Image (cartoon, rainbow over all chains, first blue to last red):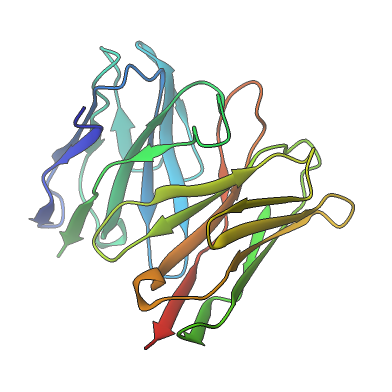
Length: 116
Length: 113
């Protein structure tokens, strides 16, 4: 299994541009998540999905949109990029609940985004 | 509102020493407490997790201690090695219903050779 994959790994955007961060998982997980990570601030939840066709806002959803048309894919859309969106973005997936002590979230390698 | 408070923000330990990272939570409905390890340029990876029906869980050199009455839990890394240098995140969630963990802000651990 490839686990959770993310593309691109790096991207530089100009203010006002738009882009889509891609995320895919091959573990048949119901739940998928998007986080942003800023230095010293931990992981902030942007959006999450409990299954295909179902998405919900997390802690910091403003400026982002998501869709979940399949179990495998969960793209994150940035519209009108702003410097405040400069961050590292992580996609994750999981079962609906922790099935054993070692069944938590599986994270992708991240996308480092700079908006200038 | 920070529901999971993690300390210290950074930690420097000598090789062979014990690294201790602490977390405190507020929501008494939380009943699943994982720790994640993140190396530079990589995504976090689950390291060890505990449920509140036990006070301690050990996996090799990594131990979680849990104090339900104080709403605190900690990660102990015994015989710390330079390869343990990473950022560690604690998290807390409910094990039933929507699995939406709340993360601490992370601890950057450096183990000197």
